[in-house]
Length: 356
Image 1 (cartoon, rainbow, N blue to C red):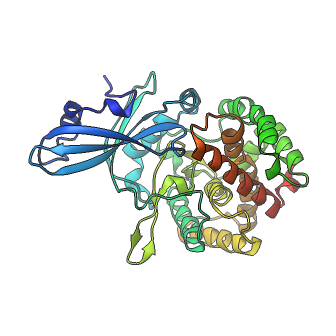
Image 2: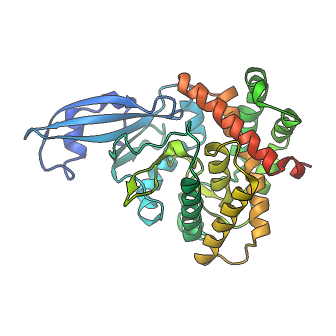
């Protein structure tokens, strides 16, 4: 029987001693759990469990379980929880992008209720998507995404459990349940974020979403994070330089590599990012793929994939602003910021020109 929890607060002394006995040199005498990720963890619930040890020392771990909002059913329909458990079981040790060490991972295959216990790297390194991304971080994110994609390029069949982004049933669900119902409330409540013909472009993306998604996700397959943005990163400074530790691998899947960098740039970079800077980093991403042995994938192909993926990643701001329970004020502010950045990216890369 799987060991899972409905709420991080259910993590007890007995569970800590049972599940972490190989990690701890002393027994745990008491546990207190504090919720984390206000306005960040829209699709799951995260807590920091402080462990009082029998010898007097203290340790802490991160406990992750299903969402405590109505978003839980969408997460289960999108297979988010199983994706993340499988990522830590099968891929984390192979990925050039670091992730927190997994101490325990289990899931109920029927209900998708789960329990994930990770090492605690502290609050200081937590990324904040409400802040504009530095050029240093943008360069690093594109390069490390290229390293991850190059590592797994053409090798996704090695992981039979892996789900793929290009799944017609899931694409229909995203279009009909998330994107299209979210357009009108997004336009009504965040109309000041739109200019020019952007309302028409965003609406037309919704109409053509399934076709665009198929185009964006076709071609060579690799492992993608699927939610590659600053809020899903820890950014410790090592020897004076920022580094990336990736978290929230719930959307790990097989897909088109440029999806991750389109997601990152549209979600995390300033809406005032200059086109030549974006193109410079896109070329560096492509160069990294070549360094990792990718063949038969031209820069022009990479650029078209990137522009297509900028359009389908609009589903995230549409979902936050128009479909999902944002949870709190930070969630609402995050929706506005991400929407403004994503719309700017559509304009900057002239994505509307790819619409039929």
